[in-house]
Length: 570
Image 1 (cartoon, rainbow, N blue to C red):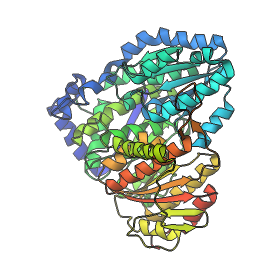
Image 2 (image 1 turned 30 degrees about the vertical axis):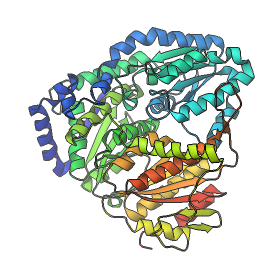
Image 3 (image 1 turned 60 degrees about the vertical axis):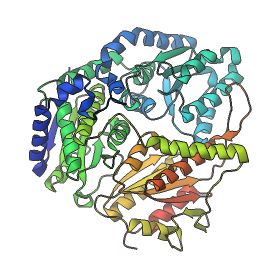
Image 4 (image 1 turned 120 degrees about the vertical axis):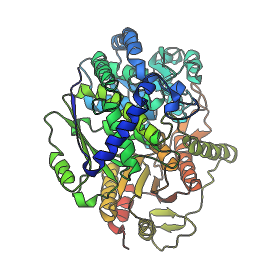
């Protein structure tokens, strides 16, 4: 039974949305989506016809539940207490939501996520987890995700040292597509189980497939209830062709039409209990719509501000659990100030099953309105290719080919365009901020260990930049964000100001060349640095403005220096 309520105050934009809905109805868009008609988005079927399996995944997953439950019971009986999921983007974000929102049911397996190549993060998990009692979930659609496979090789060796190589494979399961390289890898290393997902589902649409539901079941969630809510929502997305009764059509029309009219900064506030759901939506919206010089920029995690702080490029969405009033007053003040606001009420956390489907449909409909393909990611490969080149050069020479800093000031190195002249790190930041105009956004990209102290310092810097400029801000940890907002950064209209933050690694960690062997030609620190440098180069190649700050020692202190001096009018 569907238990959500959707309300909206769109003000002067309501008429345009109604016109968009009428156009969708006239062109039979919703029925054509359900019929898997690729011409809804593009004249050719490439990366569309083979990406629509999420529409009808629910009955397939129902049939697979007994097999998933067998795995859960087997690892419980074996004495496992923890699971570590090695995955990025669509493979990791839904499981992260399930863990943070629902927690761990009694007598079930605690789940953590590794979606980083920062050495400090990998070291932390290595020290915290007992290999003998941990199940490792190697989760990648393509089978070749470098972060995932690097983590696998490292932890395979850790487990092997503890339980012996003959038993090591029992500590690993794989979730991937049929025919991927991970299938043969799992066979070679005798994984406990391999789950082959429907290959017609893209990563960011895979929350209700094996990629999301296997981790959910290990945590002890009622997976049937999640699927019930998804099925109920899917039914509402079939109703009434394209109208307010069809929630997917209506929400997609709002997102697409508002973006076309300049309200393309989709800003989320959520009840604290479901805050992590925003990270999943961020990937879905950014990677689906950020291409061909267009895009809807999702804003998650910004602190609340007075209505006058926000520009006229914002569309606000409030995801509220029943009984929570955390942002009620803020939404009222935003509406009174003339900002468009959508409020989605949920009775309980299991309604997120329906939200996964709703937002997937909305992204597909909004992409139709923007004349783009929501299922491809044409600009993601650029950064990966450049990172691979850096790694290849390192393998041959033994050193990283890094650019010379524009300025070294104590703890801080600054890497800036040749056209920028400045005397201090703060001055370089303020020069960048002078580009702040209506419609521009600021993206903080932190290739750092996300400790509580670092996270707080970044949040303070982000809020300060927002308040000083009035611009929308985003914050992503690298390389995690490369699989989330990275596509939009290089594929949208190019209105981003990018502040990349890197640091020296107090301790590094080798990546085995092959699982089960000790030889290593590259470390996690080198890989992380290559990914940061590759993405910065890809952004510059796409005409984006990028400023990099590298902290030699104290990261928090360096962030405070930037925050205390950042002034738009400087």
